[in-house]
Image 1 (cartoon, rainbow, N blue to C red):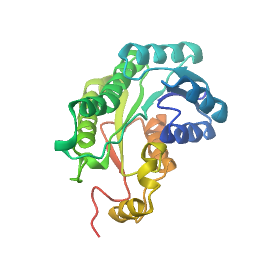
Image 2: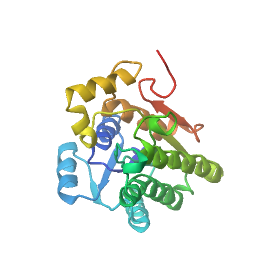
Image 3: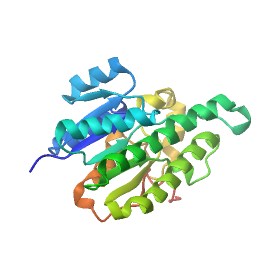
Image 4: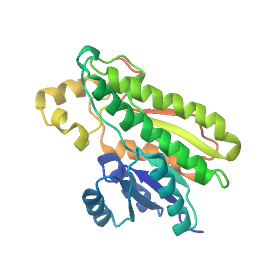
Length: 243
């Protein structure tokens, strides 16, 4: 049996790279996609994975990349959107441009992933995994923009899961807490901020990319063929647990 093939949007980032390593270790073929060609090529060499330069905000580019992957490998089993952003500001200090950028980075790329998945995997079934945030389900100070964007991602996933269920196309969401990636390096690199962040998570630490990648890989696995429309918190208990 041929190995499964998965397109990872944001494949050169912290979570995307961790996911690629996990999938490859399990015998799957991860195809990395990102906008920054130099960084993407470096990630492809480091992970020994094929790459595609893609602007994930472009519906057409994401759809075309998914179709090309399916044509080249003879199959496409899943798409994971590992693209996101981090804006820590109260609403009154957030500009219209910052909000638009946050929505583009999170909601538009997620919509593009769902759209591409529907265009390429409806005939054979497959999996699309989106990334939300614990901030969308629990009130956290100064998270208005990202909470709004990630809440929209969750709503998108639930509706799409209903729309495409009859096609065997599964749509699920992983909702992390603060995760140690380059995106939040300024926060995690400050001892005071890191300690405060760790104390917010009941399990006493922030997440590692591998924590989130494990959950994404589980949703991508064809063995989870009866799982759709789910939002899995991988957040050290942040959204649900109080200690």
